[in-house]
Image (tube, rainbow, N blue to C red; front, side, top):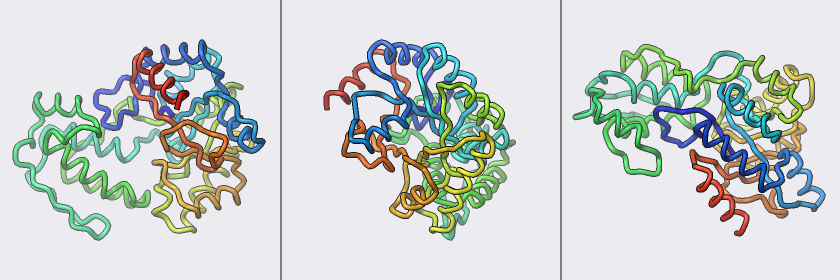
Length: 316
């Protein structure tokens, strides 16, 4: 499971792989593994004929998937599936978590107190020492990821807000981000390293026989937090819209945040999806549910660490 192939200045969720590392990872896969489309793994489970193989997937539909990842995949002749949220590719879009990151991590000065009601909850935070963006704060932010202790107040505020915003419906997420932007008096800034691809770029990817497009909901929704009606819309409309754009069936689905419940899986079957992928970090086995295929998130590993991780997985 990949998300981005680019060089990000700050990457708290470890979603970006540098193009040089990605190139090395693909070369290693080409030499040592049978790389197949993930649909083949799902079909093999149905037929009880699962063989040792690896599938490459991308979530979220970032522009660098088209600009950086696809040319390298094509060079190595390796197949990949790209799961896109349909609302994100209709426009040059930045996901809410990247917008939040931009506001909290990059504003030159933040107000002393944050005090806002988010989804009925009072959210309060006081910035005592890290209101001003200085070199120390910048370096702490750039060296931090979610596995590490929170190094300063800005990161603490970011994580507090992230947990409150993540489960909200799309419209509420956008309203809260707009309110936070006003609170910070922050000019809207879309960094080039986190913009999504366009519909045209997605269509051009789909024209390459190596590549497949899959659905990732309409609004990148945390599906288990939505009722059945809203889940139905997120699933069915994403399939309908993608099939209209691509002129062919779309059979695969990736759960945003890896989040789903029994209602989600039932709706996927009802809608005609043939498989779905989760974010459970393990290898696929013959006993796995094809509507919850696990995936290993690839991080910005050099080829030696990448090889070590794969060998650990293969030998489990």
